[in-house]
Length: 190
Length: 313
Image 1 (tube, rainbow over the protein chains, first blue to last red):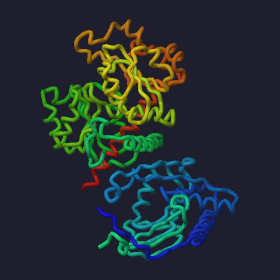
Image 2 (cartoon, each protein chain N blue to C red):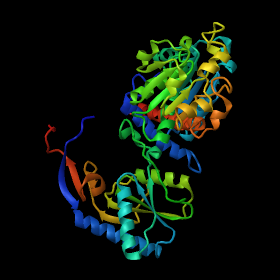
Image 3 (cartoon, each protein chain N blue to C red):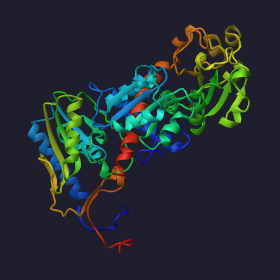
Image 4 (spheres, one colour):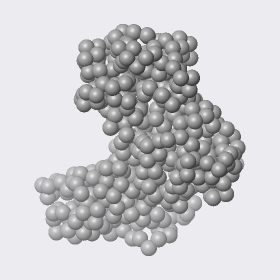
């Protein structure tokens, strides 16, 4: 499959807006949980992990307690590998403590079809029986294929299916921003 | 080169980055095995047929565990209790496997080249679980994995393989794998069981004196004396007493020449033959690590082969 050339259509969040969105979500999480007791933030690999870490730092800044962070790799739970890479890279799952009985907030960068979250729910439940699972995403771009919704959203963005939302984070990509890309434009297209 | 649902008959087609990737996946699989419920649905609905024409404990059971942990269905067919005992050929048994909908056949066979033959039929991809004196790729990978977990690296390690090199598919596969990953390899054994030509063929040094071979080694892999493959009676094996005196591994020899070295043995151990009893209790003995590593590594290979195969659909 030849890679489609993608053109940047818009910047949905710049560094400041991204930071503000995370700060607001951190506040909402603490408000809804009435504190941080029993709270466990679980980032979905890859970009959910740094996002969870940052929200934990925000929470520590105003609650003086940082909730523990888990890292979840869901490759072995996916149902859409066919459409991904030929050799899926299996990452490591790491939980700082047993998720059983915890109030878990799953963190991911983009909520789209809901299939990643479905896989993450299966993976989490296999690790123990959490008291509750909520979902926090930086971008909700619609087009759900499963009955899944987010409890905390950084920004809702109506998109077309052919468009691509790209979340770039300092820890992985060297800068903070969210871009909306669309096919066409660049060299390599006809 | 595991793409396209291809067979894995030996490690020839895998280069160092490929092997590194399999070992990394094995780390993730090892984490799965530590969970309260060591099970993921990655290969749900896939059927793996374990076709064993030769006795095996570790390899067969670890493949079975690996299938279970990935949610695949496994069917075990051992030659002694199947129609193979009635004279069914390997080709017809492979046809049967295909007709039963097997997505992969894991094959253990006494004839060297059996895996290549079965794979070349083009019916079902084959993962070699040991063929004659040719190759045992999953054993080699689990050796690498067990060592890498203890030492954190493979490159630059001094590895010594001791024993019946001539009859050992483990030696052949593991030697090739360690050399590919940048280890410095020495082979040691009685001249009758270690042809000098094995050195250049495997990219290793050949040393007939055990003390000299062990000196400064980071890893010592001891092979099993394979009585069942010495079909010509003596089979090039000097008397057991002579073998023990010259090439038997005991704690004294290990501590004198390479204290702190890891000790590997593919199992099953002939206590008192190639290894003395007490060495298995040394802190460097990682024989049990190897068994645990076997499940993780086989999960990684099953996953890579069967998931790679899905891409083409």
